[in-house]
Figure 1 (cartoon, rainbow, N blue to C red):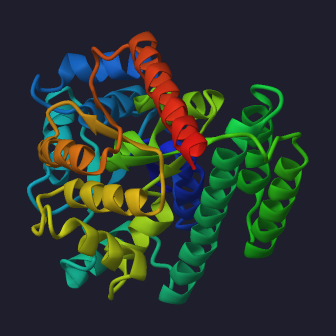
Figure 2 (cartoon, rainbow, N blue to C red):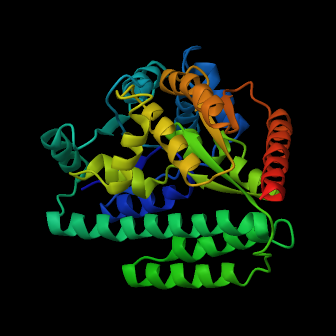
Length: 366
């Protein structure tokens, strides 16, 4: 049987776990390259003008990868008012017009259509591996995703407290390879522990006054650093600790497994007085997490969203009200190909400075 060549959209460090799973399923993986200005320029050139930033970046990623020879593209679908659920079909039409006859495999949320999800998995399993084999492959690579999230969270905590600027980012990049190169669950466990051990060796000031910033918004611009100019690293270097509302482990748990996690229930409950209905994308979650961050004593909030993202535009309107009601600073970035890193950094510097002054005033009064 011919070994099929497959690719997928680039999304942070998770691409290494995706690659591992697809290789376990017998594919030759054509790795997508990390999105760059060229990637975005390609997407902008061939995408509809009204389409959002993630759509353009993903299209650009395909256009960079397909010339290497690809039989299949596997990607996610979606339900509700958000346009993300239509990305795959629109991408497929554009690519066919350009002469790329590649097969799309779209994984829709299993909680919506379990039977359809199973059929898609069977199609993806073109070498007919047993369900037990597939389960073990998923379990192993899921463990890798959890390790990647744990290490990233550690770096987010340490970065604003580092004594030498850039030391956390440099070590984080190094120890990521431990997990990326691990294969078995035992190897991943050991790699995670060693990575955390190495990060703990970085000289930091745990007594330093650090402001805490929550971060909410649309999933792609939250999880793919190239889409937001590595905003978390910038914020950390400015002396603020970032608490991102979404990691792939939590999102996958809440969108693929039956039942509702305690975390999801609390987010929906917090959002209910302001936005009781699902409006697509992550709009409701942005509201709920904002309220929870306020209750947890955070100093401010940053919302990241693609320009023209309707769910986050709705959320932004409500966040303005929440900011006024609770005297809680909120900064929103709507991102597209016109967004510049320099302007973004200037706004961040002013915002973090505001949070620090506000925190010092609060401490002096107490």
